[in-house]
Length: 95
Image 1: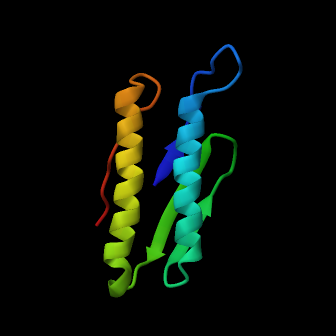
Image 2: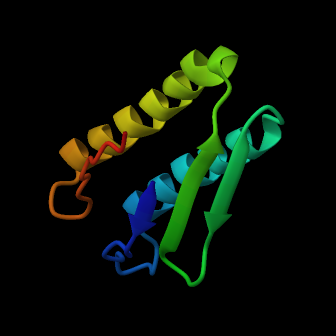
């Protein structure tokens, strides 16, 4: 998973869309990190950039990981529908 970008800020300097993306992705990263059965690598080299990769997925964790992934995907897609032009979700599946 790669998350990149910054949302347009309101006059107050805040961006509800940016905050929502940050909360969703940070929660997923922390949830994945807490699962000791997975091997997870992530990098946030600069503000507005997050690269996340799950390197090892035991068979008994695949359904759990799909649930976590689906939650994130659904949340980001819903944000995209609520704020078109502020967030774009592109999906690429690796084999």
